Image 1 (cartoon, helix red, strand yellow):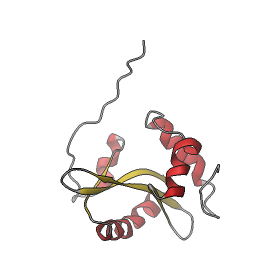
Image 2 (cartoon, one colour):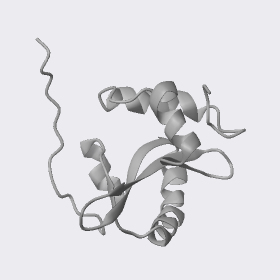
Image 3 (cartoon, helix red, strand yellow):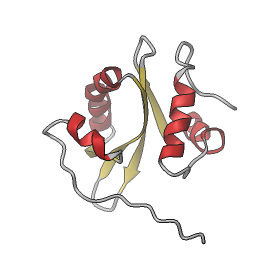
Length: 127
């Protein structure tokens, strides 16, 4: 179980792995992401032409369920084209909110209907 990338989208796997590194290496593609995709804890959303993909996960909080935009790779326009379908699917799964964590520059491409609700930070505790 070393890959979950659908046929025709294999060029996205290294990009998704790079996204994991940029996010602080909290997860490993083979050890963590692929098993979640295989057992349904994470979901693959890819464009038909293979130009973009988003990996999501559903998170249950005490007061509601959310869809978390966990990983994205490929062309920006292709990834953005996936959002309406992901949101419709997530509503069908009982989600009332979508969340995600990204680089500061993402703010200018997310659109006006997105609220910035906090500050993400990372600090090494290893000397």
